[in-house]
Amino acid sequence: MTSLKASLQDDLTAAIRAKDTSVTATLRMVLSAITNEEVAGKVARELSDQEVMQVLTREAKKRKEAATAFDDASRPELAAKEREELEIISRYLPEALSDEEIAQIIAAAVAEVTAGGQSGPSAMGAVMKLVTPQVAGRSDGGQVAAAVKAALAN
Image (cartoon, rainbow, N blue to C red):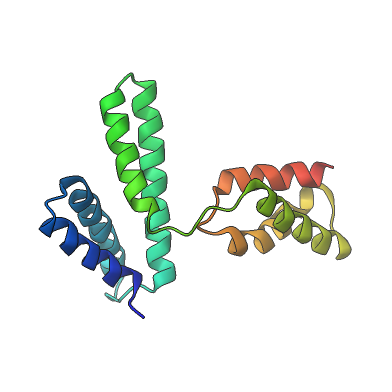
């Protein structure tokens, strides 16, 4: 099985050969971010697929925020470019969880934490600790935190 980084590099080569400038530029930017992450710290190392996924998720979030900022600044051409990059990056991310799936994960975590004696807003950290690994990379953290807060308020 090839690693996610190797898959990105293969797709970059294919995009260069196909003269697809937007895919080429986006994949180069993503691979650059991965390389920066690999050499950060005291010892250079190869990132695991999970760590590469985290970098991809971070880059996708940056594109989403930039597109919103450009929309707010009345710069639709720049917002469209950011959305195009986001779409290219999204090809490599796992499918997003539906609201129902997130609600089920949160309900199970809330039930587990409340069975342990915690309840109300003070249980937020314990619930998030259970929920976060299950939704990492597949859902927006802010959306999940708001849903957890709402579930604990009920």
